[in-house]
Image 1 (cartoon, rainbow, N blue to C red):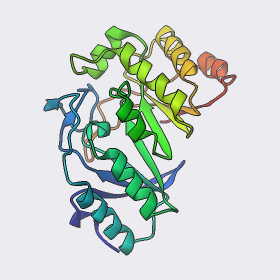
Image 2: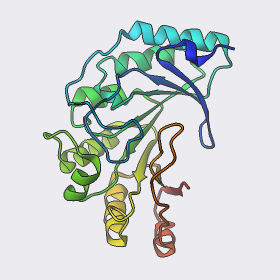
Image 3: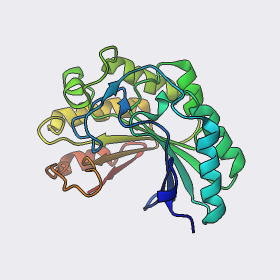
Image 4: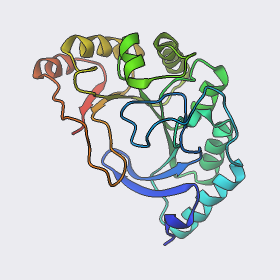
Length: 245
């Protein structure tokens, strides 16, 4: 069995209750991102940008994935991610197509903040994935600025419009991920308004959770409980709502 410590891009396999064995592949430098989220376990963004770049040769990244798979049992999913926003990688579409053609039995998965989805080429790249998860924490511009601290050219309306356009074009499963920051986006009215926006997007699943701390660090985030009244109301939605501890 190959050790992920021997690789630059392959970060190893994690167990997911929903997806099985997930192999994480990181192809962007720390910390190049379009956001500077207050809860990010990787720390402050050092290069806040909307400019897509070819951070590393796509052949190098794929060769590592292929080598890892040749020495291990194939994962259920390959998560193509980054130490920042993965859609900033210009070779993203090519990389996911290499993974899908190289390992037909393995599905592909991406987690994105949605900030570049108003670009047609980004939507084309991301639509090649078998599963897309998009983070959206609020439908309020001031709260968005407070939590995500985005690039100065990024507004919430543009982000939401990009997600909705992706939903029109993408035929695979789309999951929404909501990160709860107590006292910032956890008021009942804020949650109700956000869920109205998510319902307009029409994903297959919406997940509410706390921020994840960096490995080896104790979480600083206070546990948040969604009111039972909202949970009962949301049971009637045409998609699954999940509450992660």
